[in-house]
Length: 425
Image 1 (cartoon, rainbow, N blue to C red):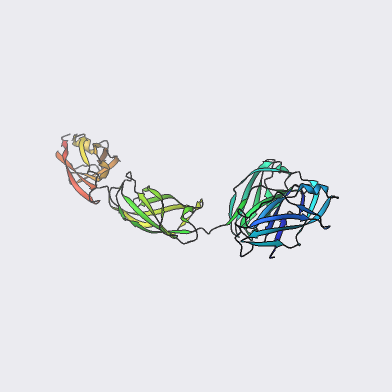
Image 2: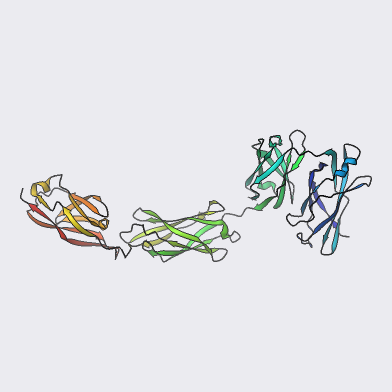
């Protein structure tokens, strides 16, 4: 009959009714999810066998590890404690595997009185590498009696520290360098005074921590955009083993050469392969673009809730929305000013209309440069840049330069529908 090697039993000292964990050396030719555990017994040195009634019958939810309860029949054993040989069979694919008689535990014939109770652990899955540390919050009752260190029972015995101890909670601190084998574990807490053991009745999954991938922006299409336009980003990552499910796009930022910054709306990641994906985006229609200008696209992302490194940016060109009409000036006040008033510091012209934020400069006639003192899309106020001491009487028109929304270039125009008359003093 093929034999089974027991790696360990934890804890090695158990009371009647207490829970223990057995780890079996994996059997290479056996699928653990189909293997069944049978005929678990604890045999005293004199040959007296005690059948274990309460134990897990399989390995479906563990890594060749199962738990059992010391049977109540040990109450009849004479003496405060006794040694016992652990033996059982594993049935798989028509084969029967039998343990050797070389795994011995100590059974205390006292009744087990759990020193703690545990209601939850958070999280139930942690990720570790050799350089990282994970913390598991344990909540329950009487946890202020817990010892400052504990063990994890699973694919390998693991040492861990216990901190933040209070009556209702404590924190188990696990170093990745102390975990030689990944898999499912159970936390073993110890009572500070008696060293009685309590196995937390919740599995803790320990997974490998994947390296954080570097993201690279491959392309943007199209790369010439107007407000409201849709575009597609193609992105790659350098770690093929990490999934796109753990990557989150948290921002697509557009930095304009003029100094304005805006955010594009973005959809979910569309995986193309393990290393490439695409993201559909829309440039906000509220982005103010008055002339063709260069811009830079930045991607902000996270990987498993931590900031991901994006190695580059992409260049693009923004141009005005061609659906935006050209500006129109409807009125100017004052439309008549004396030469004396025009030369004074208080001379101020106020023009109203629509899309007046397209205008970049004003001249009165051909010679007199104006300074724009305030400007909105519906109103502009301007005054002479220098006093027009040589201004003559007559009717003047404004000459303006503006950013044409259709071409995105600067153009010059003489305003035909508003005039200013300079009158005698």
